[in-house]
Image (cartoon, rainbow, N blue to C red; front, top):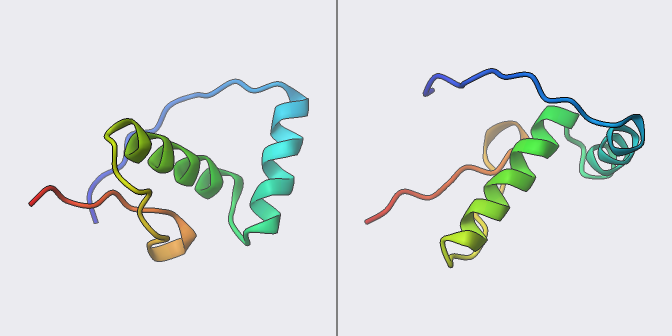
Length: 65
């Protein structure tokens, strides 16, 4: 598995609670939910359909062919 970059992210309590509810609805951790949201946003930005969930419930970007 490729190494991951850790960083500090500051969120309002309201945003955290909303992300936590959303993550619970999709059976993910909040961290997994944030990763999933970011993968989908990057896929849309690249003009591709968002990838499906990968291991651990997080989406993984598709490799370019």
